[in-house]
Length: 116
Image (cartoon, rainbow, N blue to C red):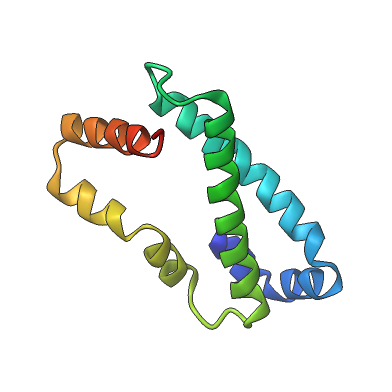
Protein backbone atom coordinates (compact mmCIF):
# COMPACT_ATOMS: atom_id res chain seq x y z
CA UNK A 1 0.00 0.00 0.00
CA UNK A 2 2.77 2.45 0.90
CA UNK A 3 4.47 1.78 -2.42
CA UNK A 4 1.26 2.70 -4.28
CA UNK A 5 0.91 5.87 -2.24
CA UNK A 6 4.55 6.74 -2.93
CA UNK A 7 4.03 6.11 -6.65
CA UNK A 8 1.10 8.57 -6.59
CA UNK A 9 2.72 11.16 -4.30
CA UNK A 10 1.34 14.14 -6.16
CA UNK A 11 -2.25 13.00 -5.61
CA UNK A 12 -1.77 12.13 -1.93
CA UNK A 13 0.19 15.26 -1.09
CA UNK A 14 -2.50 17.45 -2.61
CA UNK A 15 -5.26 15.45 -0.93
CA UNK A 16 -3.64 15.85 2.49
CA UNK A 17 -2.86 19.51 1.82
CA UNK A 18 -6.47 20.20 0.79
CA UNK A 19 -8.14 18.31 3.64
CA UNK A 20 -6.16 15.97 5.85
CA UNK A 21 -9.36 14.47 7.28
CA UNK A 22 -10.21 12.85 3.93
CA UNK A 23 -7.20 10.55 3.97
CA UNK A 24 -7.09 10.20 7.76
CA UNK A 25 -10.69 9.07 7.98
CA UNK A 26 -10.47 6.57 5.13
CA UNK A 27 -7.13 5.14 6.25
CA UNK A 28 -8.13 4.96 9.93
CA UNK A 29 -11.37 3.15 9.13
CA UNK A 30 -9.56 0.63 6.95
CA UNK A 31 -6.76 -0.04 9.41
CA UNK A 32 -9.18 -0.17 12.35
CA UNK A 33 -11.03 -3.05 10.66
CA UNK A 34 -7.76 -4.84 9.90
CA UNK A 35 -6.42 -4.48 13.44
CA UNK A 36 -9.75 -5.41 14.99
CA UNK A 37 -9.90 -8.55 12.85
CA UNK A 38 -6.30 -9.38 13.75
CA UNK A 39 -6.93 -9.04 17.49
CA UNK A 40 -10.11 -11.07 17.21
CA UNK A 41 -8.29 -13.92 15.44
CA UNK A 42 -5.38 -13.85 17.90
CA UNK A 43 -7.61 -13.91 20.96
CA UNK A 44 -8.88 -17.48 20.59
CA UNK A 45 -9.87 -17.74 24.26
CA UNK A 46 -11.64 -14.37 24.40
CA UNK A 47 -9.26 -13.02 27.03
CA UNK A 48 -9.55 -9.47 25.71
CA UNK A 49 -12.85 -7.70 26.20
CA UNK A 50 -14.70 -6.22 23.22
CA UNK A 51 -14.13 -2.74 24.64
CA UNK A 52 -10.39 -3.30 24.97
CA UNK A 53 -10.14 -4.90 21.52
CA UNK A 54 -11.75 -1.79 20.02
CA UNK A 55 -9.40 0.44 22.01
CA UNK A 56 -6.31 -1.44 20.78
CA UNK A 57 -7.56 -1.39 17.19
CA UNK A 58 -8.18 2.37 17.37
CA UNK A 59 -4.82 2.97 19.02
CA UNK A 60 -2.82 1.14 16.36
CA UNK A 61 -5.01 2.53 13.58
CA UNK A 62 -4.45 6.15 14.65
CA UNK A 63 -0.75 5.47 15.11
CA UNK A 64 -0.38 4.14 11.58
CA UNK A 65 -2.45 7.01 10.23
CA UNK A 66 -0.25 9.54 11.98
CA UNK A 67 2.87 7.97 10.52
CA UNK A 68 1.30 7.96 7.05
CA UNK A 69 0.16 11.59 7.15
CA UNK A 70 3.51 12.76 8.54
CA UNK A 71 5.35 10.85 5.82
CA UNK A 72 3.21 12.48 3.13
CA UNK A 73 3.37 16.00 4.62
CA UNK A 74 7.15 15.81 4.93
CA UNK A 75 7.43 15.05 1.22
CA UNK A 76 8.08 11.29 1.23
CA UNK A 77 11.68 11.74 2.39
CA UNK A 78 11.92 8.06 3.23
CA UNK A 79 11.09 5.15 0.96
CA UNK A 80 8.06 2.98 1.62
CA UNK A 81 10.42 0.18 2.66
CA UNK A 82 12.10 2.42 5.25
CA UNK A 83 8.73 3.31 6.77
CA UNK A 84 7.73 -0.36 6.94
CA UNK A 85 11.02 -1.35 8.52
CA UNK A 86 10.49 1.26 11.25
CA UNK A 87 6.95 0.06 11.90
CA UNK A 88 7.80 -3.61 12.19
CA UNK A 89 11.42 -4.25 13.19
CA UNK A 90 10.37 -6.95 15.65
CA UNK A 91 8.63 -8.90 12.88
CA UNK A 92 11.84 -9.57 10.95
CA UNK A 93 13.64 -10.72 14.07
CA UNK A 94 10.74 -12.86 15.25
CA UNK A 95 10.30 -14.54 11.85
CA UNK A 96 13.99 -15.34 11.65
CA UNK A 97 14.54 -16.62 15.17
CA UNK A 98 11.36 -18.39 16.23
CA UNK A 99 9.75 -21.55 14.89
CA UNK A 100 6.07 -21.28 13.91
CA UNK A 101 4.63 -22.80 17.08
CA UNK A 102 6.56 -20.33 19.24
CA UNK A 103 5.47 -17.39 17.05
CA UNK A 104 1.82 -18.26 17.70
CA UNK A 105 2.46 -18.51 21.44
CA UNK A 106 4.35 -15.20 21.46
CA UNK A 107 1.43 -13.45 19.78
CA UNK A 108 -1.01 -14.87 22.35
CA UNK A 109 1.22 -13.68 25.18
CA UNK A 110 1.46 -10.25 23.57
CA UNK A 111 -2.33 -9.93 23.50
CA UNK A 112 -2.65 -11.10 27.12
CA UNK A 113 0.02 -8.62 28.21
CA UNK A 114 -2.11 -5.71 27.02
CA UNK A 115 -5.29 -7.12 28.56
CA UNK A 116 -4.20 -6.19 32.08
